[in-house]
Image 1 (cartoon, rainbow, N blue to C red):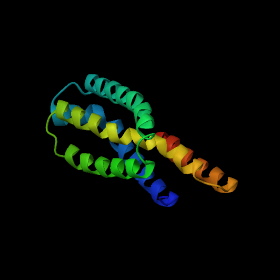
Image 2 (cartoon, one colour):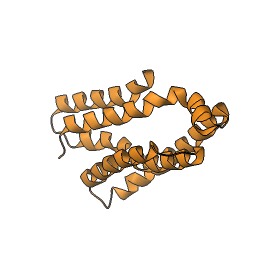
Image 3 (cartoon, rainbow, N blue to C red):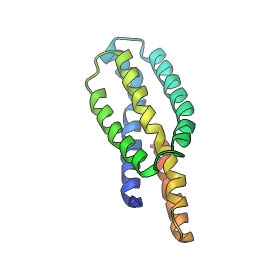
Image 4 (cartoon, one colour):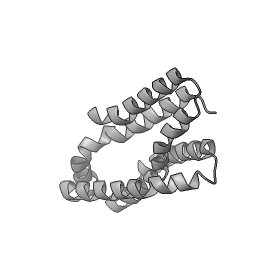
Length: 143
């Protein structure tokens, strides 16, 4: 099993990087892509949410055939690669497309909770892992 500490660090870094830019999307879209930042931010958010809503259950179905360890490690690596690609995109629709591909892989991260908690035998460790996961996933929205 992958170290829970390593997984939580990766999860924290992924969630933090996701949240840092989001309050500035309207200004960023206007300045970088010369589009209506407010309208395109709304469109961007809707598209992103649809991808995550659709793909999270699909990842769950795939995990019946593939090992969780391989899926999560691959998803984290692909997430890092796509974020590098994302930094070089020059159009709004390129940014949107790269972001949606990013979310294809990033949506698998929501499956970490049952994997981490389910794999633990000790009740105290389960409670600690659940608390840490909830803090990272839901706490980053407060930042």
